[in-house]
Image (tube, helix red, strand yellow):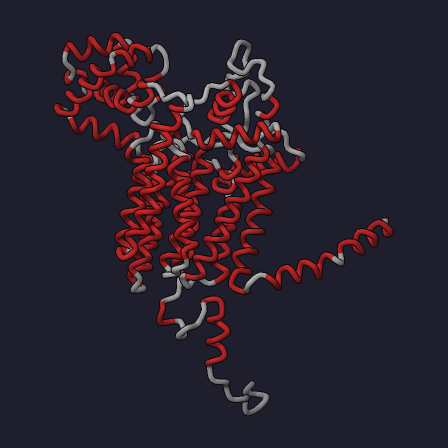
Length: 511
């Protein structure tokens, strides 16, 4: 045993000088961000191994079914479906995709750390926030989900990092390219992200009006690209469009809520059309829960009939909107509650459990869509260590404690917190460009408020990550605290050198 230890130590010792030489080659200003990125990756790898090949949901199985059976549809992100397909075709599983997600998230967090330092945040706090993101189960595990929303959240973190550098008035073109890349990710990884990018662009324009050309390029071009893909390229290559009933499910849900609360508002012709799609009792029952679209759209709701009668259903929606706009607005705000209000009860925010059912959410049942699929083994948790898996499940389950939901899983809370932090920073420092730090969060919040089918955590997960990352801005130094021309990383040493040396003590007793 001693011989083996000596042999292992002898082989390891030459690596230490090599690592030191590699660290010395890293520029001094980049050492902290690189170290933070590596530490974040180490923690993310622990989550990745605990839930290997990654956390999954019903959507995960849907992605795999679509890309392995030729049923490509644009109701989900086609760009993310391509990543799923590549991972399956190249490696036969999903671990490669989730591993790359951890690398992208860790690199983005290191980039954010560098941006916080540029804004005058002390190194310890600039490092603590990214590490908290990966350590806390609600945010640390989100990067290893096989979900388009995970890629969307990573793009949001990258956008926040780019905005931090631009707010610090760092002009290198690289930050604008990274902002454009992040906005492209937001545009292609979620179908209803156009409001998010547009609102983020408007906030950036208010923060940096002289940079309107670059802001337009970084936001309008990704939006145009996503629109061209969704309405031009994807249909041309055979990707199916979402059904009409999927497009207008929000309108049907508004009708359902209004009918449940005020059935006397509806005309006989409206009721006749509605009864051809589903029994009126089902319309009322579906509207009893204004937070979710799914109860209405479930059987006995007849989707083909709804698509056939869609025009008449929209006439009903318009009539109710004209007569009782309060009911329609209430239904909309209730469904988008996760974007603006704190949860009232446990059902307001749905948090995905950390387990994959044996029947793969019904897909692998006898006669199911993936009953005999050769890709079923890829859709299960297979960690290399049972102990690590148990620890990961314990931590994730503990974080789902209802009393912690408001803090760990509520995106609306962190949206408002981010705005207050940015406003405080702008009041303390004459830095108008700091408004850019709220751009991504504002866009994400508005996008969910405009259109969301249910109160799912994943829709507002990105603002939680950005809220954690915004906290260190409370400690950002005022420009007056800096020495002229001093770099934030060297400010402490420069200030110590400029301070006059204290006189030596007169006696031992005085010392």
